[in-house]
Image 1: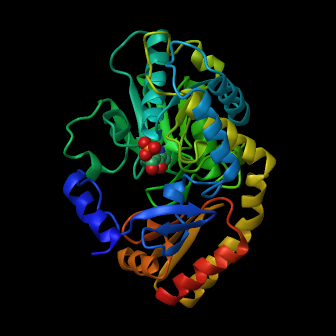
Image 2: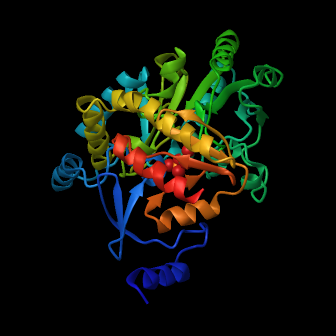
Length: 395
Ligand SMILES: Cc1ncc(COP(=O)(O)O)c(C=O)c1O
């Protein structure tokens, strides 16, 4: 038995079986490559599901974390800590928000965003039946609140009614949203680019109309930027491209680049009528280590001009995938935004993902027939070529 096989057997015995994992045990990473326990090298076009934007074994990031570990890892939110305050100031500034709450995951950021919207409505007029509109085919997480707004009934079916008072509209169909709005609607939540649902960017007109509707009726627009935010689409946050701003936004994944962090942030107008002491909290959320990770990630984004790099390389990425599609009839469509791309086939992609792994390429799916490419944001042309060559040889 290889080292990997031994660990896989032990993992299968001890871990709760909530994932059908690929039979790979990753041991280390360097740049845009991962290495398994036997030393096999893989080009990573998944980035830990859109997390490791700045590449693995990033010395400055590692050093910043090590320095913070030696200083202070945790104190609780009963006190102030410098990294979290610096992270809050910077995140608010780049997201166009005024107040942020740090969480430990994207799911928790969604929970906070939902609670913020409900509390905003409650402050205006106390009631226990406010409604939130979410989108079909969306994904927002697996806790009961986040699951309740996730538009995949298969994920929800075993878990009862969820938090209740949630209605689902069709993404990119304004009339379907408008039809669900009533005097009880307090929030509309959606991903700016649907990720798990198959990589579908919001259409400009749709988002503009939803924004306008929210303004007219004082409904809070919550944009989930957990996957599509942090430079992935060639904008720091995907909504920038649309020239609109949400009332509440969520971020996670690449915000910590490997340290588990998330955030929900809101404008002052919302904060004034929303969560107050006693309404929300977290033991770990925004602790000094998490704060230091965010500060360092944002520093590198700034200094390395990461967003511009994504913008510059996007046409090349698109072109390579289009070339692939023109060669292979089984590819129905390629689409996406920036470094968040889908290759949709006319058949399940499980076999391609497996064969790609054998050839040293990590890609993931977004639905049965869709390959999802969400590489580290620091990839170069040569990595796109390498990915395209491997996919070309297998499709
Ligand atoms: C758009 C979106 N929202 C929320 C989540 C949940 O985030 P997490 O897995 O960090 O809890 C995800 C995770 O994939 C996501 O893609």
